[in-house]
Length: 325
Image (tube, rainbow, N blue to C red; front, side):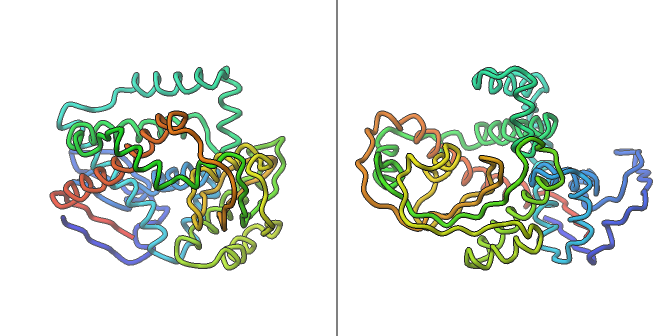
């Protein structure tokens, strides 16, 4: 793999660049990377940040221009590098995901939730997503699935015995009538306007907190990082509470986490939340049959992540990747 890193700021300029190569004769707003001679532009990185963090493109633009840590910017650029590699490979193998498949997937999700088109877009807005952004997310999921099935199908197939073992390993997540003790970061925002500037700041601050935890900082330290962006943020650490007393959205997140793990940002009850599970107690195990399908999907997803990482490593080894930061 050819990989070249230039000085920070050299490629993320606002000057328009005219690329004269026959492969892509078009005006480009600042090339930040070339993947097998295919350009990735600043505006594409900005859109990736906006989609990923649930913030407007203008705020994403400011985030990229003010960020001084190259690793943070590389995180977003690398996501586009990977999607470009996958898309190229699928096209080469005649397995490109057609737009109709994206249409059907989005429509199926909308109908499964019993929502009309307006209600669906309002729900997406509460999650910081536009319909085009959601379609891009679904396309990426379909493309990842397509390349994993094509190359590593046997590696991601799970048996019922494996699912039962996985159920036993995660038994604490499926206790009925149990209690949980949490640390919670709450970013209050007006529920009436999901597009408000305060919502964007809250999502941005929440993601900063999650990133800080991922870097090894304590929850209290992550709270300090988030408050610099969103002073209204609150840190709540209480006693044990019955799972049933939590907000439905919070119950869903907590059930995904083992003790000690931290959620990503999620929206509920007029605010953005991040939760960390400190401890659990009490409760009785749920019947395996009730969670079998969900756990089968979860375990398959975990194996797919590993298989996909292996595929990406193979693709990168044979690719020409020139990152210009």
